[in-house]
Length: 272
Image 1: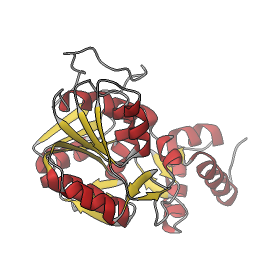
Image 2 (image 1 turned 90 degrees about the horizontal axis):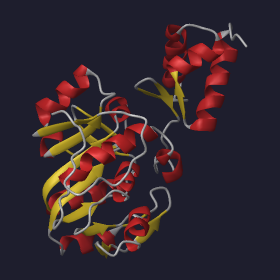
Image 3 (image 1 turned 90 degrees about the vertical axis):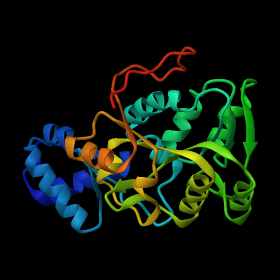
């Protein structure tokens, strides 16, 4: 069906965003029978109205103050998150103590961790991934359960972190840009900030859509990040921003293969 009228076209775009959480400008243009420029113009107008959030390549559902539900976030940019997770595996070598936050990209990494680690986490998906592994030590952080992030949070969680020493903190974000790294809610930001504070090294995992997204709670300077891992969908300007601020940038290639735990000693193909 060709959508020639802007109101009906925008209603259809909103329906798709509500259903899937994301709409691609390229796909929508092909399926609705209009130019990609027309779709981008529609999405800009919807973003001005606060009905969608503009991201690289399209638009996503606006993030509520408490953050989008974990399952909705996990279903977005799946290939990019898996690529970033694979490329992050060599950054957590056996024998270290690693803190993992409650992000969906970090949850993808949890399934790929090498043996011999001590994992510190407040994330229920990460806890579940680690409890079935006899080759990992797990320190589970308690606190008040936060349904949107499927994690424990609050003063109990933060106080528990203060008593720990961590080699590497692996963090995710809702958005990142020149002014810093952001989360969707205050409780999540507080725990990310606490993990970064106790870690000797901070690793930030980003799918490239986060570099054009917005979120309210700033929890870290990009300059405080030792290594950022981003997928190859990031453009030259975005990579330039990261390279100018962070000590190391790892660009994860995108491919169609499923994420698998790498062989011991194997290193994913990345560019720096």
